[in-house]
Length: 223
Image (cartoon, rainbow, N blue to C red; front, top):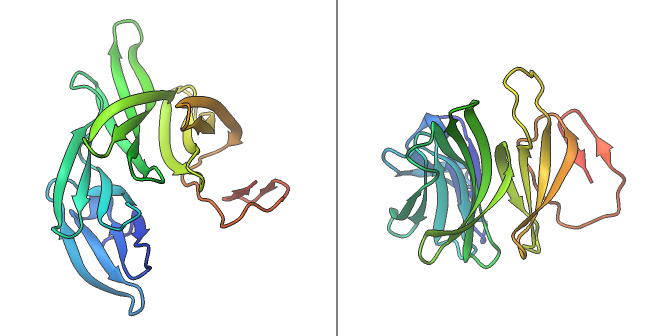
C-alpha cells in the first residue's frame, strides 16, 4: 500500500484509519491487533491528506491533496455527507492544509493557505484558520494567522489551538521564520507566536502536564 500521510484511531482503539495523500484515493482501514489492512474506503477525486475523527467515531473529516476542499465522511455508509471549498475562485492558489475538531464536535477548524493576486506585489500570501459549523457545514468565522499556515493541534481542554505557520513569507529567503501560533478558541483570537522553530510539521500533546524545562532535540521540542 502507499505510504501513510495521517492516521486516526477510533475511541475504542479497534480501528485505525490512514490517509495517503497523493498516494491513493482510498482511506485504508486497519485492524490493530492483527495489524491487517481490512479494507479501503474510496473517496473518488479527493485523495485525503489530513483527517480528524469525531468523538463518537461516526464521522471522519478530511482535506484534499488535489483540490481546495474539505469534507465529512460518514463511516457507516462510507459516503461523503458534506463538502466545502476553501478560499475564493479568484485566488492564484488555495488549499486546506489541515483539519481539527473541537472537543464537542460542533466546530471544525481548517488551516487554509491562500495566494491572492495583487497589482503591486503580484502575490499576497495568507494563512487563515477557518471555523466551520459541523451541523450546517458552513464557514462561520475565520482568524488570520500570518502569511503561511500548516498543522493544527488542539489542547486537551479544547480552549487553545497550536498552529504551525509564519508571519511573513519571503521567496528569497532559504530559511523562512516559522513559528507555532497560539489561538484562543473561546475568544477566537490569535494570541501570537512561539518563535525559534525551523520547520514545525506536527504538534501533539502528552497525557499530562509535567513541570519540565524546555528541552531541544533535532526534531522534537518539549515544553
